[in-house]
Image (cartoon, rainbow, N blue to C red; front, side, top):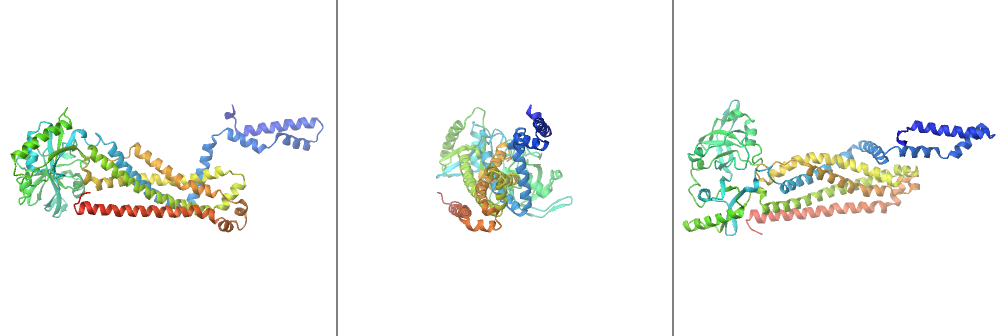
Length: 529
């Protein structure tokens, strides 16, 4: 078969055929020299036959791709400043876009990998005068003790600023300073389904007796105690009270929380003697969550909570009345929160895509400038018989190599950016244990985005570069002449590529200004839109 034949064998067959033809012509009376010439004329173009044989024994698309990749690598290495600038710009745009997509992907596919049975975990909030608020300690105990729809009810406070006294532990010493602490119920650290890294949580008995114990946050333990397990059982001073450290929270538990310690809820009167929020019914400071009983739906639980809420309002007329106590899904398990977050994330992704568009436009402009410099090279290739399609594909391979390198670096950058975005959004979304990782969807998105970017900034310059006048390109003054006489052809797309980044930048600046005004109006002035 033809794929078993080698090039030397094919050349030997041609030589044998020519020799037989020449021998026959000599037998007919021709001279040896004339017979050889006549045999070659009768055979035709030998080089063309060898090229056809070469192409028949190979996948030419792959062969061209390998050759173009090698040539593109040499060209890019020859100009390291341009290559480095292009790769870094693409890495920033692709990395930002991929990081935002990782958040969207996590929100869209949120399930049991973040919170065990997260769909059955709901939060309770009080709706008063059209606004949601947290619950007081009295309300928390009321619903905890009377509801039958929940398997368990837990709570945690907002961050409270406390003073951690000097800590001496071996050669380690921590000076006194303010830290953030949360007052939590005994079942809070285990209710989301996440275990402690070391030690134990406090028990119900310690909760009821206000035992002076605390659990350290994992990040705080790593940062201030170098991850030393010997800190367990040690006593520290917290607001001038001796507190024993009995456990370390898991690494996946509230990874972006700046809390340093978790202490029992009933310890609040000891650590906050002037406020004592446990006695004040007007202090709404607790975030309350509950686990639905098996077989119980959120609608059924809401009906029971409505009955209990009405009974509470009648029994305590002097207390601030709530319109209703609402149940909502935990974190992004709540469809309303998830949809709001997805809408915001998609809007941010659109803005980040504009940054990538600006980078692609600038790269296309640079490639057009390089095409002017390489006009003589391209003219020589065209004059030697290269087709425009082959030259366009070769130039596209250079662009795709830049996009591939920028995409690979962008995927690595997105790993860090996605974790940083979680840190920024955690106080709003109240995520617990969200573990962002690049699954196949995120990697596929990064690869497709890199491919699209490479085609977007490489196709137009490649087509423009192959539209050249061979006579001018090969002339001694072809470079200068081509730049003068074909200025309209060169500068027309370049002008577009100058205007587009300016327009997109103006849109980004306008959107950023509107976002700042929105934040000032809603959050700083407390207004609602």
